[in-house]
Length: 465
Figure (spheres, rainbow, N blue to C red):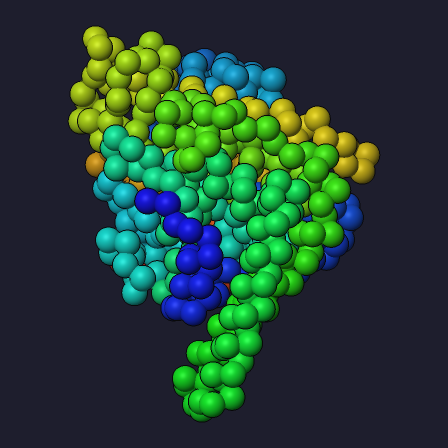
């Protein structure tokens, strides 16, 4: 359901989730000390799991194949191997690619959905605010690389037959018991992110509304005391943060105009007639433009979840495909569930390849924007449709300035609850440590690893440069 921006911002600023609209520092402060350019991170969530054999390399030697099948530690160069069929569009980026196998995610929600938990490494229950234990990893990374929007969340989800539209609750979390907002269709994302150029009158209207809200809330704060005064003061702070962000974005109008994406008319009014591939392509265009213009350095993109309608898939153009049905081996129009799942993944990889291609085409310093970017594609719920969370494969692409020792390699970590095993908490700790946050450990511990008294705290040192 679409949400009017003014209504959403009023309720968000005055309600429990007011902090979700706070912004980061100006983009000029987002540079990393070494290169002078911001670090960027793209998190791409997909549903239905990624089965480990789907990312195994078809040209393993017999010894490598056995180690992989037995889920023993393994590290091989991708240059010596072919990629799985659905990843062939990444062939030209193989030297920037890492396939990370063996991470577990049992401390997050498994089964059909993970909600916020897979990016926060905690149990959250069924999408309840009370279950959100901490800021998710994307928000933590955004703190390390500030930008006007701080963090942008996009999603293509729905109710099995119709896509959500407008500004809706997201899956990321800026802090405990808080839910982010996200843009649920390309047209809304375009209007909101690029309005300083696309619709400057809307910016003026928003600023007038924010000024009114600030004055109203400041007046209330003067009349109240104690906890109620603190709550109102937080609301005022959120409003002031949005005002500051709008000012920064207005200053960037020239860069935004230069890289403004072009949306096909099919996406007007929520794009009710747009196919899923058309929506994915448009969201990719917006994602890249948001990074290139400097509006944000961190994007989280739910490219699908189980309720996402799949319409217009090549070879099944007339079908409205349910990802949930595919998870139960239901095919369409004579095409098997496995073949359709493969086609869905191919479509995802085409979008990942487009992101990399586009960023490689934008000069930055002595290289390109991709040199300072890490793109991660991963299942929100582990290794299958009804997953147990014992494995959560990550497909990672990173440029020349990556601070991780993993590109160009297939890396399998020891299996769950064995010596040397690592969890998504270890992986997120690795990202944070590598890019400037020395946190000892991010996320909850795995209960079975704890019972067996295996060490599970900290970064994955084998991946640290």
